[in-house]
Length: 88
Image (cartoon, rainbow, N blue to C red; front, side, top):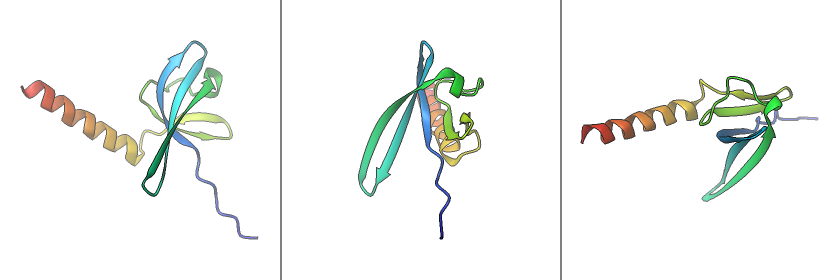
């Protein structure tokens, strides 16, 4: 039996509300993009997770994905937007 390893669920922490982290999950299937928000109990989220963090889920909870391509791309995009904003 040939089983492929399932990709971990990934998302971005949108915000924290009381005892929950609200995590945005974006999935793309061809040209169709769907967005889903998950309410995750804070105890399932690492303590170093902040709003805007890219996270992934494994058997022990949600963790920061600091070295991901998405994280690096987002940092570059934010820096570019801030440079444009403050150069005016």
